[in-house]
Image (cartoon, rainbow, N blue to C red; front, side):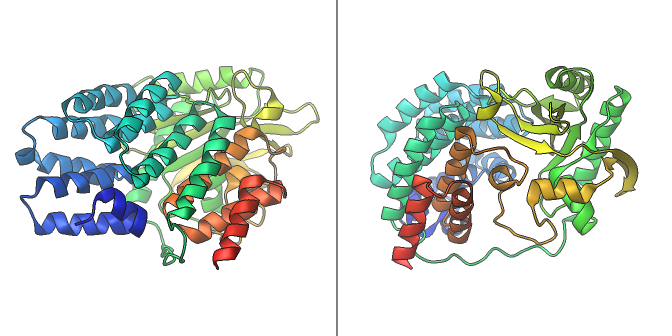
Length: 420
């Protein structure tokens, strides 16, 4: 059977996983196949499945490496990245591998630790023995550079990486369109509801006024349900007398006081945005603190320490009022004019567009700073790497809508036209 790296490059991630899994299941004593299966799951971040598989492979685990990987997966699911890094470092000393190194690089990105990312990136380069491995490593390094706030380096490497991916045969044919779920998974929706209730109870008890925004508000307004497969709860705090950083500090104290929620690493140094992991459900809560704009509007988005506002991703919203309402058996605050706020996030939010990227194309976003452009480039690399042709084209088109002269997006669309 071809190597996982070759299958990944030639068949795409999902097909490669399916082929490796089928081969491993047909050969229950083949250690190499089972380790390739585990690596494929880890690379696709299917952590639940990876953890279960690692736990079943004790008979292949004389060195203890798989047990360490399993424990690291559990720690990462709980948002304890420091423990995950320590466990993976132990696994690395037992049996270094390129994909283990790439996983470490991704964890360094999640931690926002540039020195750690550089160290593991250099080690990974020594293990990349063929063009396919070097391309996979480049995709990982784009992510690490972005999270290390090296936005210029991100864009430069992304351009080279997309060129390499297309030269290797990525996106030559349309992949089968992903099936759109007709409705949510009741068990998953119940986890979302539990997390929402737990977060609201803690924040409101602390005297804060969290309200629904973004995906949570979109599901409420358009579908009267949680968005299918949504992995987080989107909440905001309205402007107040205190700076946004102080309000978020109060929110973090309220959420994390009893251990139910864990504050995740603030990898980009954001001043008005934090993510919390619910240790009971695995669901994340994305919380943004709004602030008053000097023009009378309201600013949201992602300010970052050490950068002026003009270089950050900021959204300017019209002033809003909040009303109390009941939804999904939960009573919470929402904007009185929810339609207007959703238009500021999504434009024509009533029309489903699976490829719309609100991080890049939100109508309320101010400008197109390097931070957002680098984020768009990272998303484009990931779409091309995964063989998601239509998503990659749509993303490049959205970049061009922000900047018609964008070098990477313009070149990419011309390449797609030439191979059509």
